[in-house]
Length: 281
Image: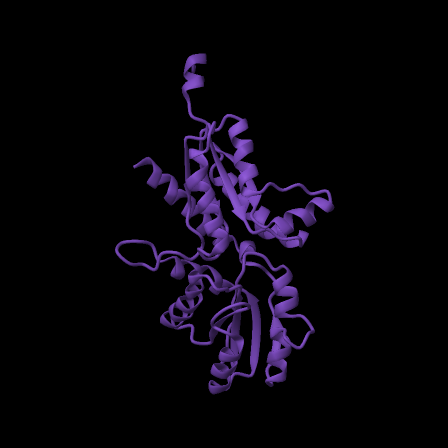
């Protein structure tokens, strides 16, 4: 039996699962909460909580009576509840601006005045290591996970993955993903981003050269939210579906975020195991 003095000496540990968030409640439950639940099962000895980095999403959910903490608020609550060590696992796809936001908090929060949190460690996002110098190949792990979503493709069929993209240097991860897909022999799987490179028009050119006729659109994002329903399959002239139809392709869609894929959830669990192991060395 643990004595009272020994109980006070034990460091309370918690896991904080952080994502951008979404206002689409179905995909929130399936992709985000599904992943959080998988982490809770894998780490039953830890307190597991979640936070969103998008203030706009948090505000909109609050107006619906759903309260979600920011990453800072979540850490403040953990501190108030007596936790001393926290492992943060981001659910971001790449180490972009939102990941940087979480990383800054993880680095600086333990040094703020009056803070009782002694240690904060942060896991890596979905795509980080590329299999070099003994590190894991996160890209190959993701390919192995998502290829279960792909139908059997004929010579004139293709899958087009829609990533977010942006100006951050991490946008290069999508181009690496394309190369990794080709290395894996998946030559009819193409990656484009809504707000970065590769662009959809470049993918259209490549598919025309391969005489592709049928395209399955698939979100390469944690959730199938606004980008999937509007930018990917919306009826506007700028949506991916409209552009592909105008280019002469037959178009279908797979409306499930990466977070709904249990194999992707397992990757996040593994990244969390990796950072916990690293902290113990």
